[in-house]
Image 1 (tube, rainbow, N blue to C red):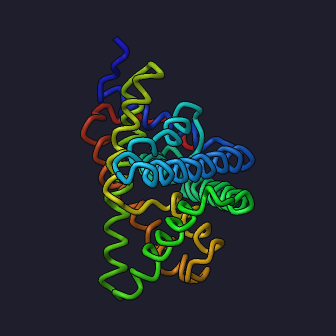
Image 2 (cartoon, rainbow, N blue to C red):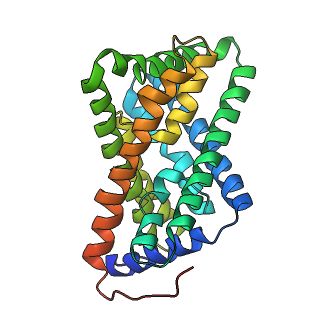
Length: 264
């Protein structure tokens, strides 16, 4: 049996957090960039599937492919780290400086990879990709100026959608730890990701691709709109959802040993 019980998963969560905190800036940037690009590729694949079938659930079904590659290869996704790295700090295994350093460089790596793929996709644009281009334009405008037009209520909606999103994304991270087999990890990690994408919630790293790509293709969105009406508030919501509803909830209900290890 390759199933891993939740009690063991709680221990694995802390071990993973500590191991992630030891990565160099170079590794955080490389692994983070690869993760950003893989999620961007998954978005374009999902948009293509949706446009060809006119069924958004089909797009949601194929979207998790990028996430499971990230999990299996042990790459770095800042939204997943939101549920793990702060736990190591809260349990005094790492310092606040190391926590902030890790999250900052993974965020930058994710941003670099996402925007790089957006540039490459824009450069490779052809007649066959026009439908996806229009979907990116529409999505980028809905994710920014549509929220802004609704004022505080719109921004609060984005924040809540971000909480709900990373609740599911981090469940995917933790669920992948419940299996020792590759197939088991794929299935366990993919289910929560399907949920968040199907429901249209807000994911900071996905938006690092969708919004700048939409801008490149002519969306009525500025760089300031991207950051003020989406990226910053969605990142904050992702932190709350990942840490509070997944990281802390799972770890503290199953970890009973309260083991300690030397601080870094």
